[in-house]
Amino acid sequence: KNQVEQSPQSLIILEGKNCTLQCNYTVSPFSNLRWYKQDTGRGPVSLTIMTFSENTKSNGRYTATLDADTKQSSLHITASQLSDSASYICVVLGTHNDMRFGAGTRLTVKP
Amino acid sequence: NAGVTQTPKFQVLKTGQSMTLQCAQDMNHEYMSWYRQDPGMGLRLIHYSVGAGITDQGEVPNGYNVSRSTTEDFPLRLLSAAPSQTSVYFCASSYSQPRIENEQYFGPGTRLTVT
Image 1: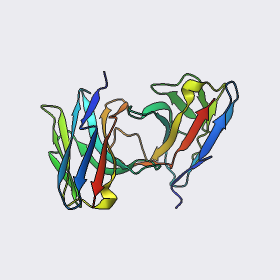
Image 2: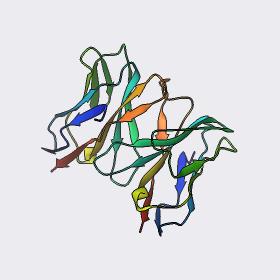
Image 3: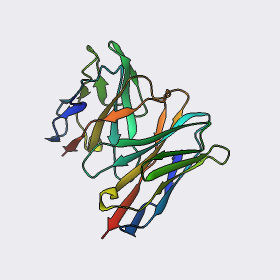
Image 4: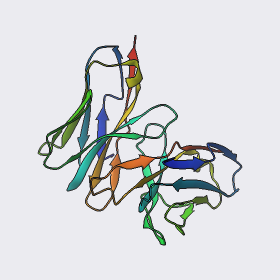
């Protein structure tokens, strides 16, 4: 079983709407949790890095939350744009550089 | 800065052939790594390096070799290609080890098909 589970697998929203992507993990202990955006045919690009003690971190219209007690993280996208169409990947790092990648959520923003 | 570059972008191999995927970075990063990405699965670590002359195995190292003779370059060698190695390969680099909160930069990927 993957140690990082993301939901939903795919999501379609209309331009301008908000959405929230979920990440549940079992990696323990962990060093940090990351969210990446991956455009089709490109490599992942970092959105946020959160440490154990951080609850919320924002990067423009992207806001990540972390609940280390329940081992859950979410990525909230506000006022979505067509350019937000991509896969969003949650990554959890253990304490020995063992990065565990989720399978990603495929987001499609339609006009 | 060019960032992380990978060549080739696409490659088709026959079973049993060998090849080298090239990766280079110009950010003077110590930590470099190779991942493979398969449909429906998260990226999986193949090999990594914490500095020139030092390499170590990741989660799925079988069938792959690496070396790190310079800080800039981290080639991945497929010794005898198998259809199970059909995948998209990403190289990544960061200033230091990922358990420290520093940005990891990914290359554009190499799409490999083994027939």
